[in-house]
Length: 100
Image (cartoon, rainbow, N blue to C red; front, top):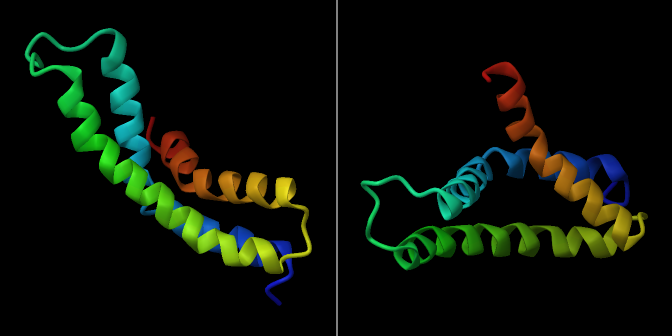
């Protein structure tokens, strides 16, 4: 059963719920990089430290969960990681479509 593509896809859709937090943090970093708000004058280094560490931790957790599944699936590595990324993004895209 673990060799099927839908098992890996389902695992990553479930991981997509908690992934909303680091995705929002990445959006915030990207939005404030070019045009920071006037009241945010602490510098960008503190933003990278405060938001970069949780994003890196969540990325490592996502990779650690997916690595054993990637070895046991029947998909090629490129197919597996593309499917995993798309599965993880489904909750965020659903949230954007439902409540713009």
